[in-house]
Length: 272
Length: 326
Image (cartoon, rainbow over all chains, first blue to last red; front, side):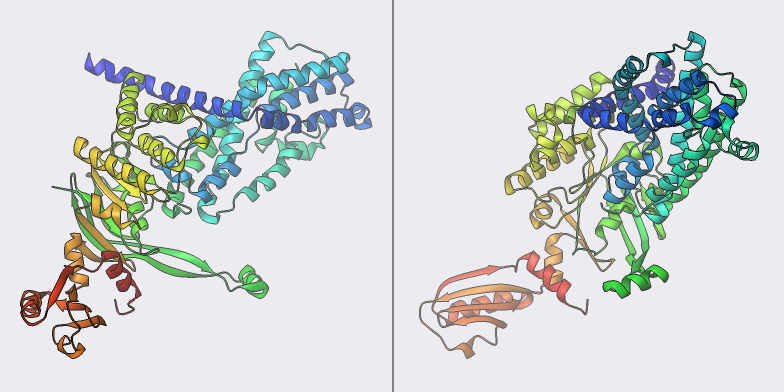
């Protein structure tokens, strides 16, 4: 009986920690609701690109219909809302100000604190994103579309997977803080391939063949284009997409563990 | 039995150096120079279970770095370190559940939420169920005299209330070893005294081992039976405060008030004359001749009042740090 209780406790414990971290971070994010509205609005780049691509000749040349491009960029807007990651900035701030030290001394990998802070922020965004979508559909009724249940479920899983991989990727680079102290500049650099290779400014199909082949060798198309295409109802190879997300996620998770272990040897606990 | 064993502990940091001004910045941009700083130079000591030990020393002496190595935050550059049977730098779960670190100038509570939210997160992290967590929160809150403060956002609390809440968050998992870095920093006299009182109670109730650094001698004198004086990265003293006083000052201060003025020359043979004002004499007399000297003074002079005391320990330590020969 005691053994059973111990096993049960071990099984329940991670869920309790996750629930507790999520609820506290969600409560914290609700305190910053005005800021979150602004963050949600700041992610309108796909909608701007929609305006540009609607009348673009390149779209016609690539054989993409007006309806397809509209659905794609609206989906990209939604994906971007729920895959936003700022862990490099938070980690750098905590590292420099000494706030990381208490986290390191608790029996939980600090990764989870940042992870649940992001997840909570995304949950806080849901109503604001819905409001933006309602305004969008009222203003442009021809853009209105509802994905099928299957598409919606696959898209939700793909969006969350894309968020996880992007988070792990940024977490891995955040470890550079242990050596340079100002690693958030790397985030600016990481934004460039994300902008051009993820399908944020142009659908992957419109890329020249060689660029598209190169893009598909990077994790970026799977972070935005892949879930956006599922959501918009486009024909997507689900198995290939999820497999790539899994492989990229696993690779960066492995690197981040290694970097974390070695980084801690460099840690000087500055600012504390 | 020793719960903390430290042998020849060392820590070196590589620190970049830069000359001031634009030219210094440009030179530093192209050719960054670094120097090796020996923050801790071979410190050795042991701490028994339930002991309260104070780390004292000036800023940059190496006491906080030592504390950070003991709790596993910083990797040592050399030496051996064993805390509760673990190598702290490995940060095993069982080790982390056994210790806590409280930094007076840093907080772990979530700034915009009431402390209770942070407490329940900590409870989950340390595997405490809700009932057990609530019980411990009530118990510690009573000891710390915290009530309504627990449901107010942390940002709305005074510094003293925040420090108490920090202590509660840090002690919720009932650690047996407490590392406290300046726990009373910035607090007013009353708040300092409350924190000290709480730490003393916690030590007695749970038999916890407490290591603390502080610049306030009152923290050390009221809590610690043993002090470790760290100076320039080395251990200068390990023992009681009285022993430290004896080590730093082999003299005692004697203040004599006379009924009528006496010639100055009559006192110089007793010891070092610190102050002379006709009827008021202040002498530093070697401890070994103190009794004989006082007997002689009382027999030979018209003494109105006589006081013997130790020089203040802060003054002695301050003098030590100013002395380049140490």
